[in-house]
Length: 304
Image (cartoon, rainbow, N blue to C red; front, side, top):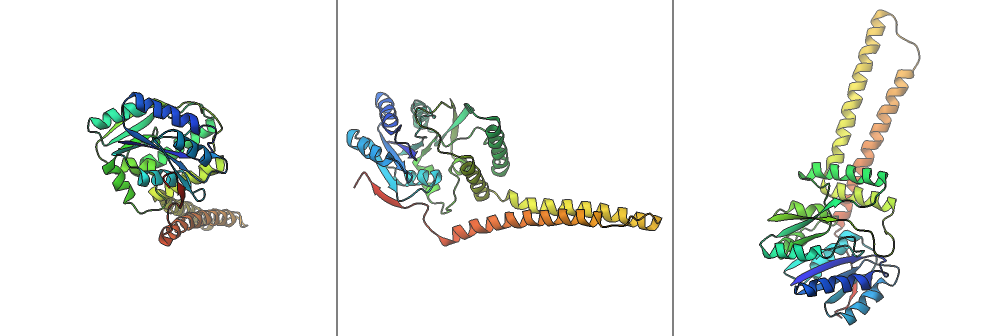
């Protein structure tokens, strides 16, 4: 059986259409399936729509969080609750084309254990958003050792891969990178990002920045190396300035005043604060991990 995991946050408008469209596509393809909606602490009537669909469509199940824990937590809750031999993660807004699930499932039947959905284009985005996304994925690609520029959460995983992910105890897990990092026999399926069927994106600029910082820190220590780089820059600038000062002193042309000293202090002070900020951010993530709190708390399910 195929489990389709659908994280949902304030998506009351699209839930009925998402459930009916995906269920119809998989029925026509004669693929045994379940549709598992994860309500990520929505503030609207998302959970009511999920329970309604569970009552109308036998294949629909729902899980409701006690509050908003984030998309990554919703995905892992879906993986933990899924009953299928393989799982597909897909966005609730239908920007991921659901008919591609059939293609992914057929590839799984051929023996592939991870089927990656990769974007042939990113759809309509602002220039700033596109630049920020490219910068983020360049950092992640360099850290994990493979190209993530077209990566997405839209992918199919065999039960073996799902179990490996669930055995990872880290709280701040980045599903998009971890599901590729674990290996296994993989293949890619290209798709075009579609416009939302209803509603608006729930991702604000601030939430996207926070999401990026959390995932970068959870998967790579590259920013920590920035502290070392800044230290080297300060050392080189300081060495050059010192040599210049000594040369001027012995030539008798040393300039009076503290301009050079002030500039160096500004450089050193700013770089020190940046370095401390980066270190502090990583320490805060370590603190989150050692507390051992759960990734999510389930309030109720439609199985009850």
